[in-house]
Image 1 (cartoon, rainbow, N blue to C red):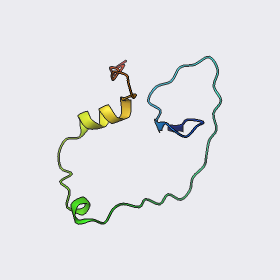
Image 2: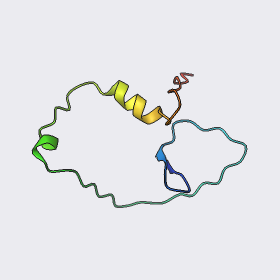
Image 3: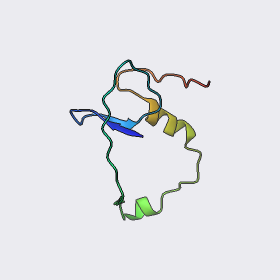
Image 4: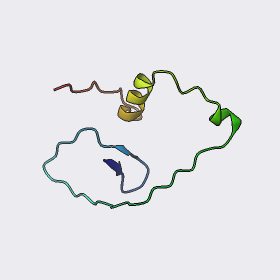
Length: 73
């Protein structure tokens, strides 16, 4: 699931959530179009490396805050 803030300045994946009250709006999307660069640098990029750490940082990082450890229940 994804989220976007009311001011459209922040967004991303919902990885964990707990609350006493919550307003949720859903958007049913049946068609997704993705435009990617067609530059030689992009098309020739080496994507074979392990991106686990970089993805974890990108998914969990909040500007101005230290990344939080994952809750492995």
